[in-house]
Image (cartoon, rainbow, N blue to C red; front, side, top):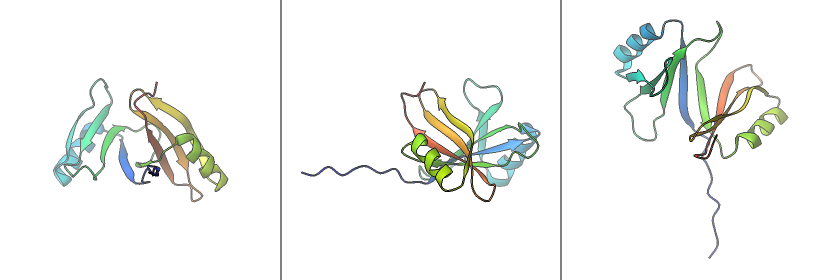
Length: 129
């Protein structure tokens, strides 16, 4: 029997919306789309956005804006943050935030593409520390 290597689809699995006034943004998105937005367990300034879709539909986060030009950030699922950081740089992109652990969930890095757009890459890994 041959073993088939399991591949990770490079799809958007999470998004983050920065807000100057998170309560105002929570009310806006809840009323506009019917999203359920609740404080993320164990956090004070980060809310989970339940979009109400299927398992294939990404949920997201709502957070206080950290700097004036902070955009909405989409997280793309990859098999290795380290590998894809290198690949992004080789293709002319930049690493804005290096590989960072989210304990027991995985790793992420924030990148910039050749058109100055910000995006994140995400590697699921329950052993992340």
